[in-house]
Every structure is written in structure tokens, then in C-alpha cells.
Image 1 (cartoon, rainbow, N blue to C red):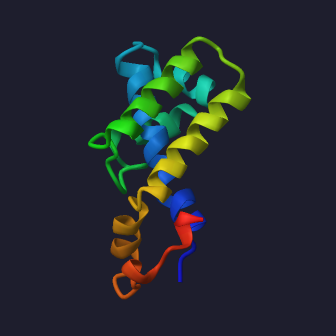
Image 2: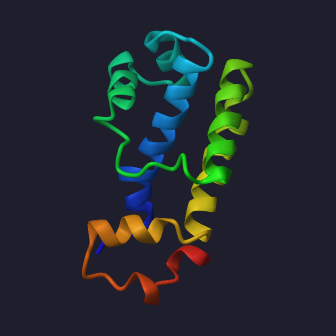
Image 3: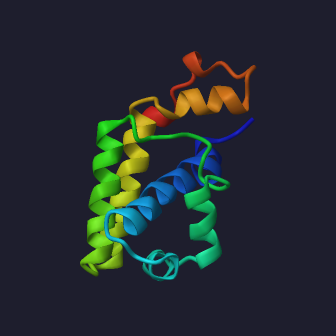
Amino acid sequence: MLLPEEIEAKAVIPSLRAMVAKRLTKKYELTQQQAARLLGLTQAAISNYLRGSRGAAHDWEGVQEIRAKADEISSMLISKADSIHIIEKFHEACMIIRKGRLLCDLHKKLEPHFDVNGCHACEY
């Protein structure tokens, strides 16, 4: 039995970081090392996000609200915004995924026998 927080830690947060890493390196043309420094990660982690070997559990680009949060986070990182505000934006993205029941599809993939329709843990 996986808790929503475990799914977030294993799949959602890495996927969000991958979205941000792609924006930092493509839109803002940062090197992997520069992007890593802004995100507090290693260059190797950024490389893995860009190659899709990390953070590829789910592609949130099709969800406009999540895309907007990734854009916001990237912009805030570039402008050297306070890290507390950046963390809040990551949290907001996670809450959109949870409350919108977007985590359910991912949960079903990870635990095929779990009744996601009967679960409402993320709605609280």
C-alpha cells in the first residue's frame, strides 16, 4: 500500500523537477551545471532529468495548471526569488495534482489492484 506522499516523492516531485530543468536549460539557455546550482542538485541529476532517465514517471506538460507552475518556478529561480516562495510553488503544483485526482492514474499504474475510485485521501 503506497501513501500519496510516497508517490509524490518517487514520481511527482522528480517529474516537476524535470519540467523545471528542461525550462532552465532550453528557455533560459542555462548549462546543466547552472541549472543544478539553482535547483540545489547535481549536474548528473539534471542530465538524468533531461534524458528522461529520472522524472519520467508521468508527463504533466499536458496539464495547463502544472505547466504554468513549472514556468513560474523556472522564472522565480532565474530571478533569484526567495527559496521559501519557490518551495511554496512546488507545493502548490503537488496540491493541484492531488486535489485534481491526477495522482490517481499514477497510483493505479504503481498498484494495479488498489481501488483508486474508492480512495479520497488526497482530497483532504
